[in-house]
Length: 538
Image 1 (tube, helix red, strand yellow):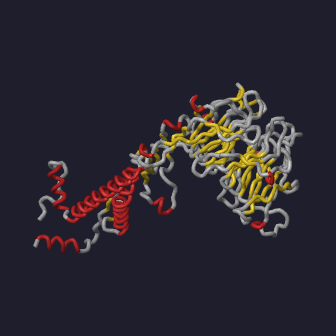
Image 2 (cartoon, one colour):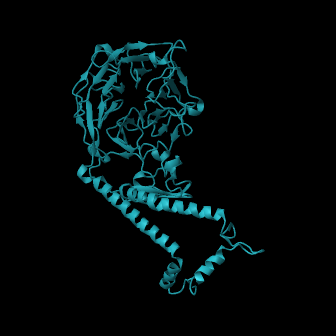
Image 3 (cartoon, one colour):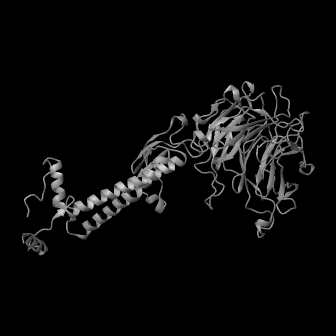
């Protein structure tokens, strides 16, 4: 009877002059819609977090190296928001990153490490050509310690950890097998251009035993099982129209380009193009080299430059100019523009249009020639080389824009980047570079002490911070249990967290529905330190 009386009193309107109870520092009316909406939103997010977000984090805590915990509780995946943590103020990276920035800048790399004596080349090489096919790396030709061109080819392979040690997940170590001798070149060569096209390796031009440029093109086909090249073929129909050494070769979707080089009298502006006809019998063939003096000529003669086949463009960085001195220039070829009639169907035309010169702000920070280079994971690297004073250790990189249709071909993040802690340990010019997996290797070259046998390596995928603390999130270390065991344990962890959270929500629901009993239990547990507000009521 007393409870029914209290219920009827609570349903009555407030008397005249009465003030509604305010809560949360007086901001909300306890019986108003604003407070009710705020509570509903809180419980919605709370239930979402406990039954969705926390089980998700429990799974990834088991299988990943780090996990992100942020204030948006998974909303970044729904609405495409930036990944947490936002505005990080504390960043801690693993020791394997060395002394580089934490987190590493886009395109950055770990500190370069010198190889142990067991991985040194059998003989010093400079101006050799380094090629990569799968997990194998080839060092073809080059100059021996006496400065003479050679025909030897050295081969190595990447060494991964055994699968039984990694839970069935391939893990790269950055280590290589000792060098072995591969199939020799048909003749001694140095300063060759090289490129890969449809799984085949091409060695183009170079200096012969007599010290003069050559026009030969040799083709090696790696075995699909072993990755080895058994013989280097010399197809007569691929011979260059003119001799070249120190040229740059790049593969584009429609064929191959050979850019610049020395014709025996000095650096050249000419560019040779060989279109690949995929519709020809036998799986396709090259149609022959074409020289277009007006359409494809470089803006200025170049030798020993570094060329990159970026998506939709070809970049040529540095090199020696007509005066024989290293340059800072960067030339760009737009592959989406057609020569001749601007109304023509570009997809049916064979040749690109013309080269353009980068503005002063996008040229190399310093003059470079005979630098090693590679285009890896959307980043162009210019490694070592020489300036006007001799061999250098600097490593430069740039990321071309490929997504923004209004800025395609421009360089992101302000152009060419350089970090002193990412420079080579030994100055090298005329070295070769290959990227196998996430590791880059610089082999041979001539330093201040002459031609070398050693190599240096760096990881082009530095580890992200294992701990980050930001204004709206954090990154914390996780277990990283690999293989099928990790996945199964992750599922168990997610199911356990979901079950525990569901039980917690059930307890909270019961407590809100039975407030006198809940407060009484809390008062008993705390031995009266927390008073039961319902005590004495009937």
